[in-house]
Image (cartoon, rainbow, N blue to C red; front, top):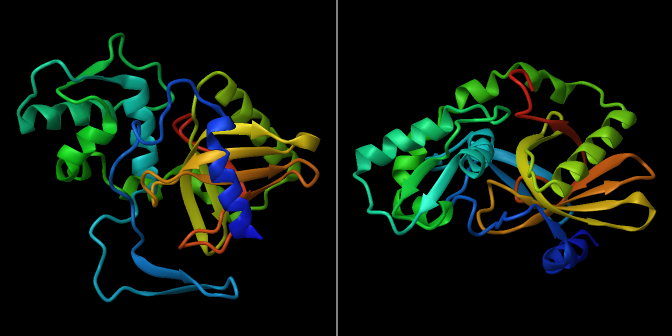
Length: 251
């Protein structure tokens, strides 16, 4: 049933209401985040976690990639007709963009990334450079607001988060969400489109940093005031708690 729901949701993305000008295959990275441990979901839907035989080379970066997608959207402008820069000049511009807090208004003028049409093409050309300069993963794990993943989540708070997210997307403003099912899953994603369903339910269509170029879904069930997240290779699917992130220095 979950596989069928996933397929139907992905087919329906064009009919959803997208955040203005956001394109999953244009405004995200060509590469993915990975996990330090090996995850797998068996045929019974049970999650298994084990050590990797070969360590992954880009891990713990779901916060970093989600934050950077929003930073490049809000604070950078790609100019494909302008001459390309040196590798060092691009490094400086990446760092400029990634130092600006997502919740801030940013600079008066957007930072120009010349020679490329969008973040996708830029990340294809400079994958290594971006991975080196988007930011360290450790501060994201030490964020003050992370303690919330282990706490109880009241249903009115989940309803409020759904309303906030839906209103943001109506304004053309994608947001980052921190999803948690303590102790086995905590992850950051970016809903970029929505489709309102009968009974106050909402299907949100989502960029997952662990799955580049592939949309997934987050479903808000109004009757239960709860969220359900799609089956993933690191999560069997089901109820999650949702928290807002990158909206202040502590959230």
